Image (cartoon, rainbow, N blue to C red; front, side):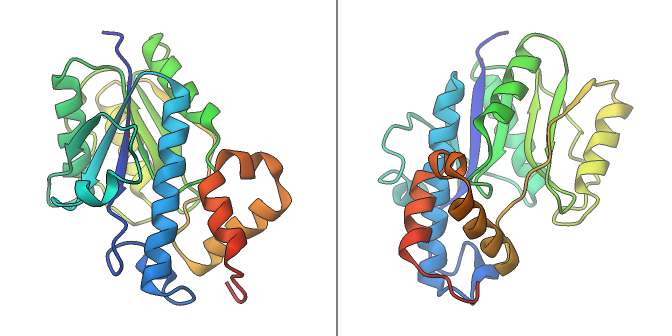
Length: 227
């Protein structure tokens, strides 16, 4: 199978639903607007990788909010499941079931993530260099997971939103004999400290500004003093 797909796991940017840990310093409406910029930049990154781009959205009615932000998206999948692991497995199963593979799933919380990291995962899986790819975040989670083929069980007994999530997923993969590609670490933007780091990166790094134009525009137009 060599019909790669990049899946974006995105929550609809609704006030009070997304980026709640950024309130304060942001208002709920500002946090939602920033999340919308993250979604736009994540979609831009995915389009640059090549292959099919799939938007895995939440909540159930979230597609209506996301469609104006992501007008070029052609394939949509609703996230279903009680926790993140169940949602990841369900989304991957649906995309594989549609005839795509490998499948690379990326979050939308890392707007300046280098596209090369996602492309590296897609190419290594497509070429048979690895069976699973994981992109670690600095808090112990991961910004990306990809597999060459369906890999049921790799998300079982994982403590989500905890610093052991990456290690537990990697251990599940090893227990199933899957060859792992570990990508470079990156950071999610979840907390005020992360937001300050993002602002500093955008101010200092032109490459980051080019990778995340929507986010950069928003940040530069909102003087996040104290963030």
